[in-house]
Length: 214
Image (spheres, helix red, strand yellow):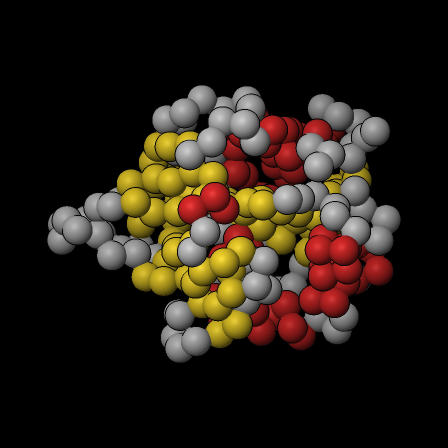
């Protein structure tokens, strides 16, 4: 079945580059991509993507401001089990809460909270910007099947998801200590890195996501 992808537009995120990367991945599968502010459009989508750039509370506020979107996400992802991808802050919003500029509730899909990166090496800069290796805690997840352990991906962030359940952490990277790179459970997956900026690794990831039928 060709995928139909809904990218949620809630006033945050690099929608143009994310849409272009997903269009390329979907095109290989004869799929379609729609950028939408309409909760009703999630109903006809086979896959749902939540991007995000900026501060956690701003992104949460933007999502809340789209009338009915959080409820539609809960129905389509949590109840109906559609494949979901959160990118960068979109992934962080999957957590129970974020601690950036105070405490802000997340969607509560992944146990844990979003906390500042705290490198043990004081010479390492924050935000963490650039290419880093992905180290997988599991190779059995179908979305990771095309990617080699140690593959490079592109990161831009100052916070990461400190997951309480280690089984929900699919990959980490290193920036003066372990930093969560990919989380997931059931029909949900999230990346702290930007697949749309990660060249071949990112495209392989997106193609596998669009083929995923959990």
